[in-house]
Image 1 (cartoon, rainbow, N blue to C red):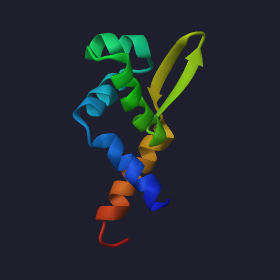
Image 2: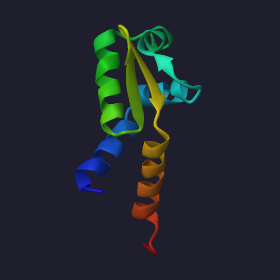
Image 3: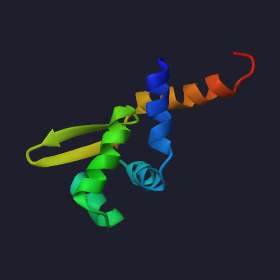
Length: 92
């Protein structure tokens, strides 16, 4: 994993609003419209946060008609866990 990819993962976790989004997505897939309602934020703000989360590969999106749905990517989540272990385990 490149340093650029590592930075993207950490960037995804370094904002309070993105943590809130991840907590909501732990419940399962959600439409952007539902996230907007639950977070009470503007659409451009949500788009900004979702771009960062998707760039990190911790969240993936899919489009269905005019709606966009987001869900936690289990593979991306696994890589984030492995990265923390790699950077903090003195035996690696």
